[in-house]
Each structure stands twice: as C-alpha cells, then as structure tokens.
Length: 145
Image 1: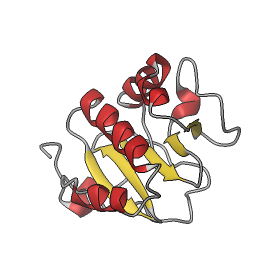
Image 2: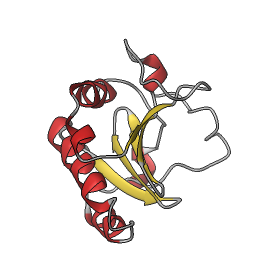
Image 3: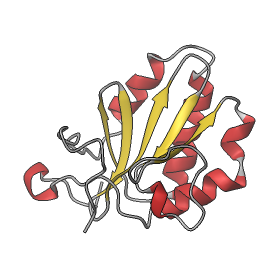
Image 4: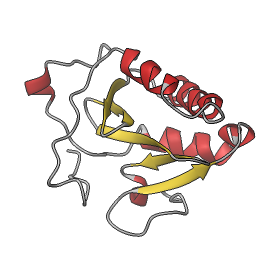
C-alpha cells in the first residue's frame, strides 16, 4: 500500500483523472523557454509508464497509478523544471536533491537533459514505487485510463 508523503499530510491529494487535458493546459501557462522542457518531460514520463492518471493541483501536474498513488510531480520555476519523485528516497539510487521524507528530485534546465538515461531510469523506478496515496474508491478512477 502506498505511504503518505511527509509534508503532504495536511494536504488532500489531487483527484486523479485519465484525461491529460489539464496538464496540456498547464504547459501553455509556463514561461515560453520552459514549455519545450516540460513538454519533453511529459512525453518521457508518458512513454515510460503506461496507464497513468493525471491531475493539476497547486499549479503543479501530477502523474500517478491507482495501485501506487501519485508518483511524479512537475514544478516549473523561472530557470528550471523540477521532476519530483514522490517515493524517490526508496529508489535503489535515489535522485540527488531532497533530504527530508521520501521525496527526491532533479532540476532540468535544458531540453538535452530530458533525455538523460538516469532520468528515464528514475521514471521507470517510480512506476514500481509507492508514492502519495489517493483513494480510487472515492474518485471512481480505474487503471484503464
């Protein structure tokens, strides 16, 4: 069973949806120089992990699986996009940034960095690692998204 992410305990997880439309709208609201980077990250995530559900909450897109909860969060800033692995501390070789709770992340500043082998490995591992829970019973979302 997925575990609560430390720091998120006071927050209600986003409601999952099989629709990617909210994330596509989020792309258009990002700074023009970051749009290709966040779109490339999204492509890698969706190509690597089948059956994802999506949400945007707190101005951040979330990617998750019913059996694992939310596993990846994107955060766009002025000069970088962070890929947050919500169970990243449990990875065999965790991403380098983040020191509290189970969350670990990387900063991506160029389009080339979206193609790093390490990034793809962390994305693959996130598809097997419990993240931040949501209740599929209450949301009515299935893994057929």
